Image (cartoon, rainbow, N blue to C red):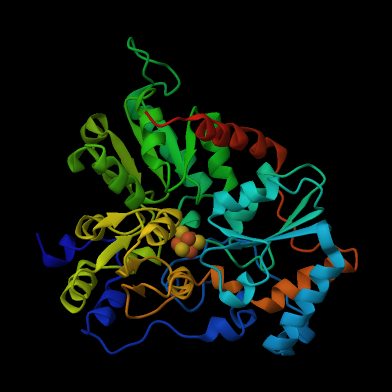
Length: 432
Ligand code: SF4
């Protein structure tokens, strides 16, 4: 086997070479910080850690932001956002994801992960508009959970998620048909009451995928409850088809005792996903070939360097990181887990964190008694989340003040009904 074929195909080795000092090239720029509108019309995710990913042709494109907002400086935008929020009062609720840039988060009524934010919106049934400063799938989830008279607004339609886009509904439907060829009818249980395969999707997926899962007896998971959800699925099916994030699927199933040999990867561009029918028969978890471009950047070398330079350092990484990184860390957990772990530390501690830089910086500012740094020395934010510039936030809010709803995210009824079923199954799934 050649050295190249041993490399994890989900890791961007060009970026790794830069991180490890083998290349002097730079992949990250600050271009998105100043003016994401320069990139919004281009067919790609733009500068940052998602730039190597291919954007699907059907992705929503943002129209041109009026010049007035592009020319305004940070202070002016800040004042305009505050004034618009004041004018709208209880009619609007602004949600800011943990990974969102500081200039936007300071205007948020709630800051949290995608599911916490969708639930926070539920506390405002009278708000006419929910402005979601996150990415597209998060706004879709908020629309699924919001009331019929509420509009969910994504300030910049180009704020997608490269991971969510890696599981396209057509590819997933095609995969399902191929699995039926291998296993037989997928909705028929065997003598012991197990169906051949249960589809499980990570929250970071489109509403169309959540709807697919709901229609086929499946369930949604978050990075906080993935193990509970897998238990739910194993109680009903012989196997799980897990998408889009192979790393969350692998790390969770491995921690539950599933052997790596029983976790084949499904590459949608290859027949039977690149496995044999025998391998699929023996599978316990079929992992979709998706990954987060931010979390795949973390490496074991970074952890070793942090340990060499900081005696007693506590390394916590997100489970979207590759398995070797999770294995080398002291702990792995969701953004909420990371935040709570730091908040619970009673003694001054050095934390090396493997997740998105905006969250790490915020935690460092919030807990000055600890030393908190990001494992990745080449700092790259989530470039799609970064599309929510304050100019876009000011624009959507001022349009609302003028009585106009722009950039509304709507999930069609035929998708929304089964997607809600999949979400309700998740909420009802209890840890053992
Ligand atoms: S951090 Fe990764 S999974 Fe999260 S929104 Fe950005 S690309 Fe998607």
